[in-house]
Structure formats: C-alpha cells, structure tokens
Image (cartoon, rainbow, N blue to C red):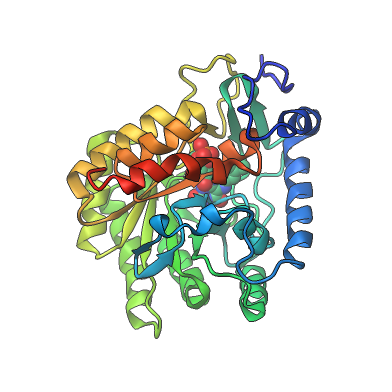
Length: 364
Ligand SMILES: Cc1cc2nc3c(=O)[nH]c(=O)nc-3n(C[C@H](O)[C@H](O)[C@H](O)COP(=O)(O)O)c2cc1C
C-alpha cells in the first residue's frame, strides 16, 4: 500500500517548526501539481532577488569555497537535476543556499515526457519518491532564454550545470548524434554538462553504461566540445543499479575520454527494503532508501578514480549525517532532491551547518 499522508513522518528537528505543518497540507495534493506550484512561486520570487542574495551567510562561508572543474563553488550543496528543469527559478534556489544547481534533463525540442498521471508518487514512511517523468521539459531554447535572462540581470553567482536527456521520439541508435546536437546548442551557456545515461524511465538508455556502447556517444560529444570556442567540463551520470565492476568500467572510459567527473547516482529501479511495500515497478526510486547503494558505489569509485574524476554525490541525502557520510565517502560536491521535498526549504543550510566540521578537517 502506498502512503500519501504525512502523518507517519518522523518528527522534524527544531530548525523548521512550520515546515512539518505546511508539509502536511502540501502532501494532501498531487506531487506533480505541488511541484508546478513551487516552481511558479520560486520563479516569481526570483524576479525580486538582487545579486547573490542568500538566506544565510553560511552559504557564503569561506570554509566551503572550492575551485573545482575550473569553477568557483561557494559551497558544496547543490540541487540535483529534475527539479528546476527549465532554469525558471535559479535566483530563488541560489537564495535558499544552494552552492550550484543542475538544470535539465533537457532535450533539443520541448517534450511532454510520459503521458500517464500520476507520474510522481510519495512514499512518506520511506522518505522516498518514485518518478516516471521521462524528461518532460521545455526544450533547449527555453532553457537558454531563461539562463540568458538571469545572467543578463547579473543575479547568479553559482555554477549552473546542464543535464542532457533523451528525446521521447528518437531512436536509441541516434543518441550520439542527438546528444552531440543538444550539447553544441547549449554548451556556451553551461558551466558544466552532465550526460545522463542512467534515467530508468527511458527505455534502453541505461545500456549506454557500458564501455562499448558509450564509445560512439563520447566520440560524438567530445568531438563537439573539442571544436567549440568555449570548452565545458563534461560529467557522466551513473545509475545505482550497476554493479561496482560495471561502474568502474564506465569510470575508466570517462578517464580515457578526458571527462571531468561522475554524478553518482541517479534513481533506482529496485524496490528492496521499503517500509511501504511497493507494487509500482516502473519509475525511478529516490530518497533515503537510495542512500546505501549510491554511497557504496561512490566509495568504490572514489577508491579507484577519486584522484582523476570529480565525484558528485547524489542519492538519499535525507538528513545532515547522511550528507557528512556522502562527503566522507569521496564526494567533493553533493546534490539533493527528495530530501528537499521532505525536509523543506531550509534543508541546504541545515546541511551546511553540519558540514562545517568535516570541511575544517583536512584529513576528510
Ligand atoms: C521528480 C524527479 C525528476 C528527476 N529528473 C531527473 C533528470 O531529468 N535528470 C537526472 O539526471 N536526474 C533526475 N532525477 C534524479 C535526481 O537528480 C537525483 O539524482 C536522484 O533523485 C537522487 O537524489 P535524491 O535521493 O536526493 O532525490 C530526478 C529525480 C526526481 C525525484
């Protein structure tokens, strides 16, 4: 039985007294509808924000500053792909304390994603979600327009990554040409680009997580990057359902092609260990249950490739201790999505409060 009420959630820490009440109301409504309302509200708010306005000075504490991928990150807590797909509300997300945001997954043309609804389901007892969206987005032109708007206003001071997704209408065999074309169109406005080869909602996409299938894709994309006036750091996003050996093989390909890093990891097709027995087999599971596997994969990749590739830790950061554990497992940057839905808008700052100590410890 899926549970859609918030009544069984654990008590929230004192940092956000109002959020549990607010969440109880929000969780009575359809998750995708609530997401659309949140994006509208945040994009409206974005219009009123000044340059680098942030909710707390902690988001700009010098101890968190890092230069990675040749970019200046004011802090390591980022927003994962899929939240602000079209870059509609970046100043508001920056205001909440995010040190970087990954927009997308984006495709060249606008597309609806999967047509059935609901496409997002909450599993409150597990602090998890299942999404079956499949790259619904407004297209690369719209994203470019939004980014130009925020950049022309001069409000953004955080790096913005762009996540590339697959068209709902193209053949898998055409993915190298398709990604190369989107990359060519969008890379001049990206601080980094993540090539998504692990969305569990896109039939066949995950097969690109093998050296042999990845080769034509990386040939095509790296060739475009090589020819471009502005070269952009490229990362690959891996799924947590790979074995460690498979993940290491993809990492080896990434190194051979001179890529900059890996995002570890995307959502999972697996449903093990859920408190809510779940009969929904389609879609990607995100949130707390993802933590263990995605972090184990991260640790393994860090041991093998942490000195050659930047590792962004994504998956299951549901509280402060898990953010610290993800950092200690080898992630130089972190990304959250589902934790934000459950813990509320102060979550990035709460994470930073607890990351201060590990950041001051040179051995971690
Ligand atoms: C509703 C939803 C949409 C997502 N869309 C994308 C996407 O377009 N591209 C992508 O690479 N990851 C996407 N993700 C995966 C997240 O970026 C993130 O890697 C994953 O949810 C694990 O982090 P979390 O446990 O903190 O949510 C999506 C996740 C959710 C919940």
